[in-house]
Image (cartoon, rainbow, N blue to C red; front, side, top):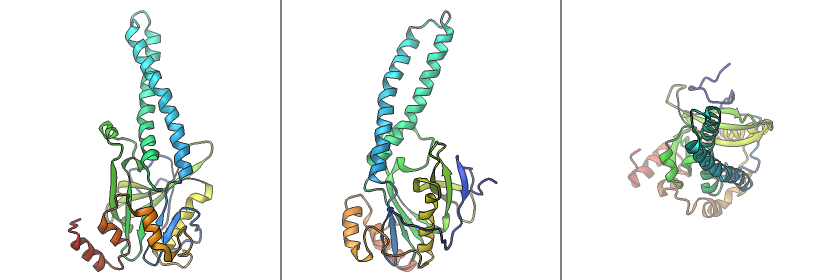
Length: 274
């Protein structure tokens, strides 16, 4: 049975249900939670170093391979050495595709700061991200964006418009990723994707989703002291994780908004028209 969220996402395993969930575990991804909002880290430092190293090595190997293929193709005679010519053209195309995939991965791991936290406010039903543009789940990108490695997207979403799915990475290790599908209101049409919990083994990929759902529906299974910073350590959390990362002032205030009215007042005070 395919996903109800369209277009279909590559590697889809299953759609996730919202609401209270007994399959829950904040693990080491939960940074902070209070009665208004919680913050989850989405990229551990060890993962960043590991994947950055892999793709930097890949990049270093691809560049000479591409240069060599270009040089050989220019020197070959298409009529007399057609098979060799086609072979090197194939290698060149494959290398360019691999380069196209590698650069966003390098940017994602190099320019992701402090784990790229995602913020959930259960009083206003809003979700906030401040992340590298290359952190998302896109495959097709305008190559011109590669000239802007520091490009970021800072957005506010409605929790009601976010739906969870789990996908696998096709590797021998069977690692799964939980993705939030951003849907048009009152539809299953997907217009954006947000990484929630990248690369987990087996049932671990469902635990953060369960914890977030319990939090958003005020289920006591989501303990407010489960995170790295305890509920009374909000100042320390914001100083260490939020400060200096380019979060708009209005958005940081909105983390703690306790109603739609308070959120509207914050936006009005900061001249936010969205």
